[in-house]
Length: 312
Image 1 (cartoon, one colour):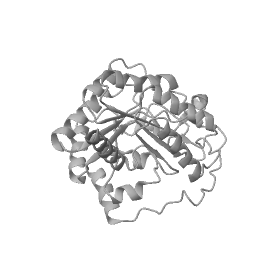
Image 2: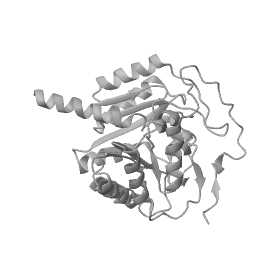
Image 3: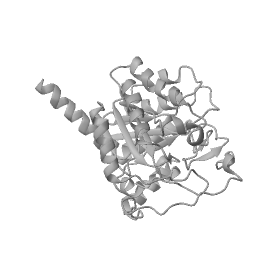
Image 4: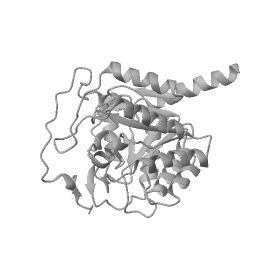
């Protein structure tokens, strides 16, 4: 029997934050396509979790209709309780030894050319779950060798050797999200440390300078424009290649409130600034998420780089 799931226990007793009505540019259609239901059934058949469902992603209808799913490994219960996240918090289940093979089978059956593999935080494990990432990468390489692999890992705080193990497994992209500006970490991401996350991204490049790195933040928590631009500078100082910026959407009244809905024009301004600062690929829009169009963006970036090198 699995461990009991407790959703965000630190918020019990706190006043609810009413969920604001979304502006027209954020509203999406409910998922109804046949391909959506086929993707959903495959995840059920293989006992796999997806961040698409667990984090209540607004793009699930579009992505699953295209057979694109972001697999969430290490179970569905997180040992952290971030104020923005809809994933259940509590005592996690034991690791599933069949999970890497099931992920690889899902990648093959969906015919994915690019897959994003993420996870919950597992502070209870000695390696934070790093070895499970390694095994998933190996199984995908064996089953679907043409598929490019993007990992979106937790911060592996106080887990020596975890980052090195995942980098040595050679994913095509190593992603780790900063999520918000440093001033808001204590309220939005209390279990994490901003400069540790920056250091992680920098360490990936030091271990393997050829590996693409990626990070992302959400806006709408009450951060200032200059704070967002400073995060961009911090990421470029760590030689991060790709950046995503999306609108925070409040999952339930118990989560952090949306302070402001950022307009599409402001997102485009952020994108322009980020490209000027040297990021190779930038996705910035109200519905941008780490894995949203990740494969298309990665292929476009590689094609552009190949053309540039060919013309050099």
